Length: 231
Ligand SMILES: Nc1ncnc2c1ncn2[C@@H]1O[C@H](COP(=O)(O)OP(=O)(O)OP(=O)(O)O)[C@@H](O)[C@H]1O
Image (cartoon, rainbow, N blue to C red; front, side, top):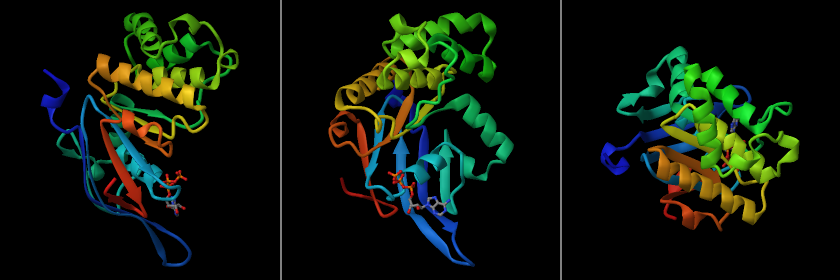
């Protein structure tokens, strides 16, 4: 079945998020967000610093809950789930990539990826093949036995991506994954995302400020002041 036949993976409906500030005051960070994330697509959230991208990404990944509205993952309202159930969802179905690469410095690229499979509870018999495959998908098969300090920033980020997809999540969330990288390295990250989408029916949602990357997206949502606005 083609990815587009599967229906939305994630739907965000009328979502508001506010945080308490001093006294009884609250700050409204998200103000009625509606969006859909589809399998097999690269979705980008773009917007100025402070527009609410990270706050929204945290809700998509079940790291936080909306103040109002619904987050629907494969037809289930995860905003109503217990913390325990959300932890299982994150472990099994979601991969996270952040601006900084979060690799263990004493382990090689290969060992870093394998460790994530051990931690995800993947059967041991699959570790080697899956680790090789993920490093191949991000174009690092030849660098597998290098440690992070022997790799460029862009290569380290691609190892972090291999780690994040190793357990075969349905959704990969990446918060400014190219922020620390030059244009050429950023383009290779997007290339890796494209190869991963081509090979596995995953949905990828990333935030970025970088206007040179937007045309590589299948779907772009522009955020401004906590709202989705026309791009
Ligand atoms: N826990 C919190 N308590 C109070 N305010 C918060 C909290 N988290 C985020 N905010 C505020 O919400 C606004 C949006 O923050 P957010 O990090 O989502 O924006 P962003 O678009 O990801 O920005 P950047 O590109 O700089 O990361 C900011 O003004 C921030 O200060």
